[in-house]
Length: 206
Image (cartoon, rainbow, N blue to C red; front, top):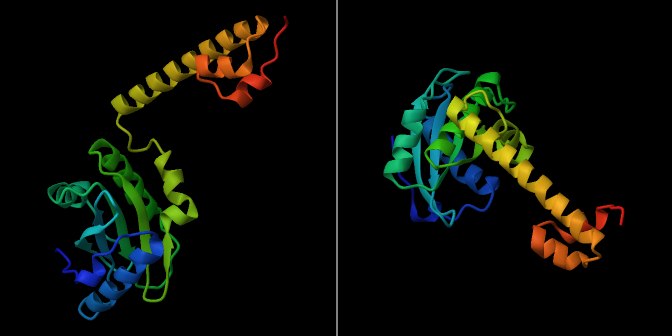
């Protein structure tokens, strides 16, 4: 269900407080009908972080809601959102994310990477407060998870990392050879792509 937004609500999102200010008002409106149930919304943003849409994806029970990636991203892709924020409420008022909350977020983060529509935050809200996955570092932690990463993506990541390691090792060996010839650190850095600090730390026998 597409949430109707006033012109005042179609703001540029600068931080999690901005999102909570809007979602708190929506939660208070919707709880008049569905008090005691979890609501799960997806929030679409434009390139400049202006709010594009808010879509109610599902209504669950008092402590759980079912969310499918297809439902989350189909609307975002139709509306051409460049990034999304997830949001759901805890009717009990407890803001600590459950294992299910983390699992859903983990899955949606990985799908977002594949469809090029990244998840930039997930807010758990109540009538009085909220918790931001991004602000607490939990979003970054889940982004490093490989639980829902397809095998071919993992293989590509490993290949890329191996290439980067090999290239860095080669750059260091070139830098060492140049230092042995007493070439200045600035020239070495520009030639190898290493930073001045990295070049200065290299120790070689002349």
